[in-house]
Amino acid sequence: MKDFIIKRMLLLFPVVFGVLTFVFLLIHLIPGDPVDLMLGENARAIDKEKLRESLRLDEPLAVQYMLFIKGAIKGDLGESLYNKKPVIHLILKRYPETIKLTIAAMVLALLISLPIGIYSAVKQYSFMDNCSMFFALLGVSMPNFWLGPLLMILFCVNLGWFPISGDEGLRSIVLPAITLGTAMSAILSRMVRSSMLEVINEEYIVTARAKGLSELRVIFRHALKNALVPVITVVGLQFGALLAGAIITETIFSWPGIGRLLIQAINTRDYPLVQGCVLAISISYVLINLITDIAYSYIDPRIKLR
Amino acid sequence: MFQNRLAVFGACIIGTLIFVAIFASYIAPFDPCEQSLEGGLTPPSKQHLLGQDGLGRDNLSRIIYGSRISIFVGISVIGISLLLGTLIGCIAGYNPGWIDELFMRIVDILLAFPGILLAIAMTAVLGPSLNNIVLALCITGWVGYARIVRGQILTVKEREYVVAARALGANPVRIITHHILPNILSPLIVEATFGIASVILAEASLSFLGLGTQPPTPSWGSMLNEGRQFLLVAPHMTTFPGLAIMIVVLGFNFLGDGLRDSLDVRKD
Image 1 (cartoon, helix red, strand yellow):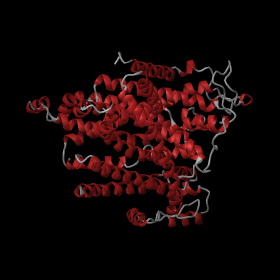
Image 2 (cartoon, one colour; image 1 turned 30 degrees about the horizontal axis):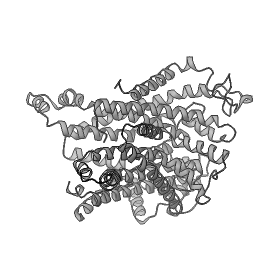
Image 3 (cartoon, rainbow over the protein chains, first blue to last red; image 1 turned 90 degrees about the vertical axis):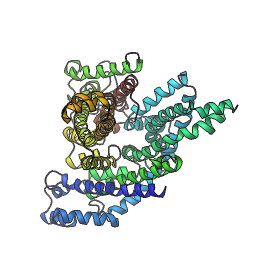
Image 4 (tube, rainbow over the protein chains, first blue to last red; image 1 turned 60 degrees about the horizontal axis):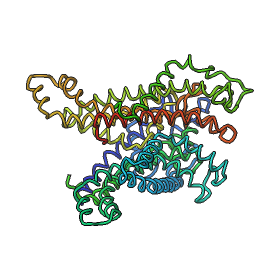
């Protein structure tokens, strides 16, 4: 197990290094002079020069790269052009809000998908199974930037149950979590169903039934335990994907997370902040994948043997 | 596949979408960019079946013309990604060693950016335009196909028919194009069908965020973005473009599911 974890962690370095390189190159992909784009062509020459210096754009590319990597390792991602604060501070302030929203969406998705997936597998091809899977496909196809406004019209405008935007305690997280978690619950329902179907015909399940165990015991004690192993991987991967989905959800509901910060940074052409947000989201995604892999190897000991 | 009713339904939706996109100029009742400020935000009526937007433009006509953007982005991104992914997958799969390692590490790096994050970052620096959306989505789009092709090549390259072709003196290009690729097409077709749905959603997401198609060009995502400002007074502006996106994505997902079942492809 230790070897597996070490090997998996070593594999992380080239990926993180690659991500850092890509994020560094982002600012250099800007067509023309990045400083012109950030400050506008009519900005004073002295301001342009100041910005060029503070972003170290006057240094050779290799030097800029080394400084960027060194800074990133120390947690120094530069200063926001718009807020005039260190990028890392802005990210650390906003990230907990995104994590809160993502966890809420994930919990909601699990609460919906587990019962639906299990029931659909147990009652395969029944009316309820067909309905659930149809709605699951509908959930996957429904864009969250459409679902969000629809929920707003229904629950905020017509029924007045929830606040329309902002962070006002637990009530304000419900609609963003539903918006973010719907596609996820649809994906997980399908996954739980197919995983349960694979397990349900295994010999040990037949044995459990032959022993005279109740159907509930067979499903929850024997089948579900094994069926959940691949589901955990999907949950881990989807948790990372939710971070990206949160960009849109946060924009719709004005949720003060890192996704909204990224869009605000793009709108104000605050490129150091854009770089910082992209880096923070992707590094978290890589780390979540690592944790998922390690957790998976604990749950299914066959993994580490591969 | 024709026995799978949902897949046939999906194919019908896609057929309709393509028909509408091609003949948009004949089907649309109004010019999608024609403004009539006195009719701004009018709800659905006999004359304007899906109502009018803030500038009095006909929503139905804009949705009809918007289908062109979705189809263009969907087909071009998947076409380019499929070609690039297949090429890279073939090179990596057929040449184990440092070439394979190099490509797979690039794949790992690109996969470290979740969802459309990279596309958002790319369009943010390159500037919002349709071509930049296609470019940004292609940069990450090829990865899935490359992995499938590489995996399939590793599986089939030691099969007897490939070994026989090699023994007969066929060169690698001929072996790949004439013997391997025809046998690994099924998973690629299924993946591409689901891929078009994802790309249409991604384009709409980017346009919704203001990073994609720019006004006055009608696109479903930007229509939703414009409609968001009038959510309380004109919910029809948000409802119909969103419904269009959902129906089309659902169509591709139905078709993808049907193709997977009929081509007997296991989902990765």
